[in-house]
Image: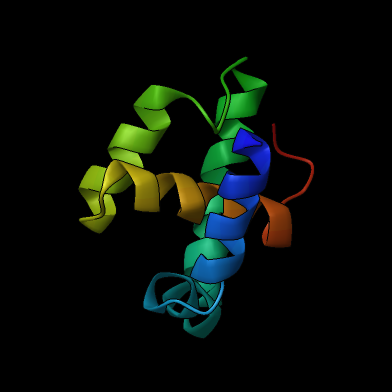
Length: 82
């Protein structure tokens, strides 16, 4: 049940200004993918709490929005990232 609610949040956020900002600025997604790939090479996850906090701070987002952004960018632009 929780997974379905979260998936619904992602779907609802897909048309949000948050994700539209990435769609309008593909370089942001490329930069994030590069960062996530570097983290993975060091054995770290793009989905870690630290990465989420860092993205939230850098992008001036809530933790939840940062989680959505990371999930969207990985899913749409760098599916090899973990």
